[in-house]
Image (cartoon, rainbow, N blue to C red):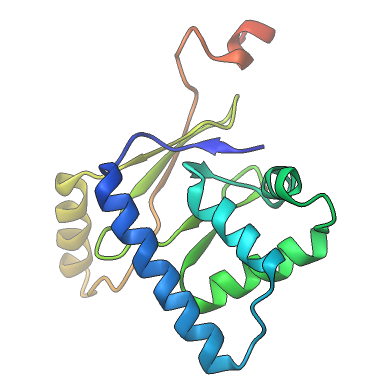
Length: 168
């Protein structure tokens, strides 16, 4: 299942970010002396074109549209490579499903996750970021990185999960 992310950055910013990620990946692959196959290239293209957090299964489904011979293991190994090279982030939310998203250079975002339908909304809030820094300093810490996930129930009446079963 793919998890939707909101319309965040403008297309030109996303395109520039993807180009930086592709260059970073190419540098990593060359430095490691790895082979760059057509299947890996296709997997990367589909991944970078994705607009949401994507599972391996959904990525495989989309990749097979372009090449039905691509196997799950190839997608898995390619995504491991993308994570190791720093161009993809692996996310495991409370539902235990692993999803992937491209790394965003010079930006940080947090997540709202619906416990019913699995929808993921990315958000940026400078007030929350400032409060986290203040809290850390008050307790004698300096934040290096963090992961902020809010688990919610969406109240969107158009939510497919809401139409399927009433909430108690």
